[in-house]
Image 1 (cartoon, one colour):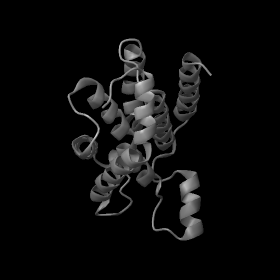
Image 2: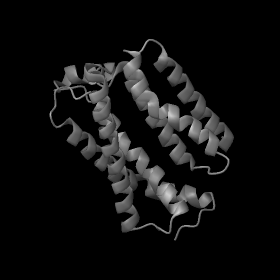
Image 3: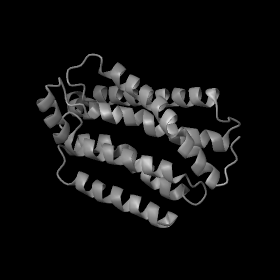
Length: 206
């Protein structure tokens, strides 16, 4: 499959999920809050495709993350049916789909950040790059928690589904910790593949 076909396939896939997500979601206020990152990222990726193309790995990870957000927006993170079934079947204390979302919130931005830093800064692969990528992902996660806080202050009870705390007083800490683990695991698992794809794009890496 050529690069254009690959990207077109990802775009069509995300677009189909987006249309499904927008049809009779749990409520449109929560849906908009959850899918807002997709509404920002998708046009941005299209506009920067020619001047700053990313690796196929990064585009695939972004597509997966978008789907996670779109599914969460449709059902809300506390009521995603598959994870509700898993909760009931295994006797879990909550619907864990939001936990998956926060792992992705660290996992996907880690590889995006790694690519941008390697291509636009003096940083080279190594401990400092690894550390800074994790720090950036933690900053993103913390800022997202700020957004949840501000939305809750502005809209009151309307933000309950968006917050998806499900009665856990440590939900914010769990969210950031899982993003932290996601950022670490992404770099441990995908560094070799990512570096190989960057070299194929003629990006110089020591």
